[in-house]
View (tube, rainbow, N blue to C red):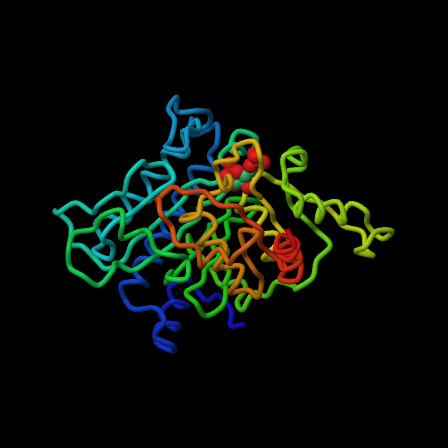
Length: 335
Ligand code: P6P
């Protein structure tokens, strides 16, 4: 790989080579990357920036909002609303959609994001991240409304996340594989550090919140039980477990060395299909995982084929190394 390819150069070359990145989409992705740089700066200040702790408010999910949740949301809105590449935005931290004000030009893209995922980890200095998904406005020319956002994940034109950890790393796909960019703080730019990311099809590492075991349905209990039996059990190998409780960090580990991540339906809230959100967590992460050779299902079907009915709808998530995800999905089909 040539040395020191910036995100801008990478996007320009991808635009020139395969036309997958029209100019407006390239501009959008560069603006999102700049917003992630600002969020990274605020996150890294921590207590010194007076940004830790709760904001004393709740989001549409009924979750206590951290100050940094709100800061990150505002950074993304303010960075993207004036550029002329977007028609609207949707965020985990906002009840309804954000329509670009008439004082700015409107574009053909829709940006959906979880501005700061894993925020319960902010105050304990554990990696968190921004997750984003890009859709195109439906062809007709009427104004943007919530229905325009309700497209299945297989309609995404770009997806990515930025993990704020020991390094700040932006991971991106536009449908031609996955590339990783590491923030060079001295230059203030994201530098290409890996492309054509591939996830091993097999793994010995699972990520799930084990404290929920008694609430899982049978196929998940069977899969995890077999992993816990190790060499002596039907899997014939020992497994390791990780759970960072920050989806971006857990997924980044899987993008880096394989593994399976599971946040399955459980009977604590039987009317909800899962905890994680479809539009701005499962869909972008699911596409990234598939683009890197992995798989992503809700236990029964491909996440990217789910037709959304609500902006903030939740979904059961099983994603990562292809053979493991297919095994869990096969256990569900035997129900
Ligand atoms: P639990 C963070 O709040 C999040 O939405 C994901 O990033 C993470 O994977 C999950 O919830 C953690 O949930 O129930 O283990 O705290």
